[in-house]
Length: 217
Image (cartoon, rainbow, N blue to C red; front, side):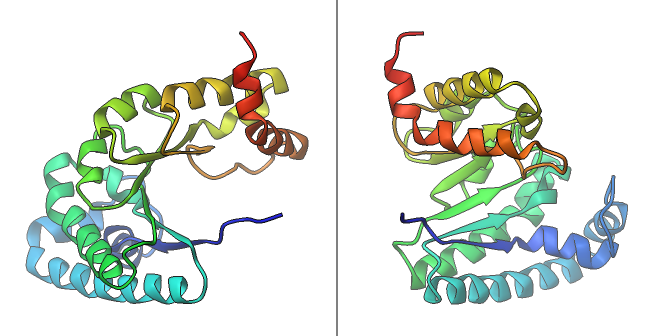
């Protein structure tokens, strides 16, 4: 059995948020205060982080990663205007450097709570936008256009439902994503306490999706 090797890195804004806040946060007031009162200093930090992240992502590819996912989990805390100022340029900086060295390695971008940012995420230059469950997959596909792949976007809590429910969510998501450029996944990580048999059922059903979709509903 073959499996792809997936690498992952944090994105500049999110790493800066953790470094400056010192912990996770509900409102990210410390880094936002810095952004709005000392933007020059923050831009310098973000640029240095972007260079380091690009180097690390390239190292992962050289070590065998076939795809690399960029997590800017907390960029969803930014307004669209501030996303374009403090997150997007540094995502682009990472992507451009990695693509210069490894043009054929697909890159994925994930942001938590990204429903209002999808079009801007595509501007980062990544090949695939990972969609969380707060936006309908068919809508996400329309907004991103035909040249950008999609990943996701089943609510992780769906795995607490019945197996029939899980199967229906899987097939509905695949139908909405279309017949190309889709990586089926949860809209975020698997949750503690998720029944192991339901996680296994998720993967087994995904493997059989082509056959199941061919059966009339």
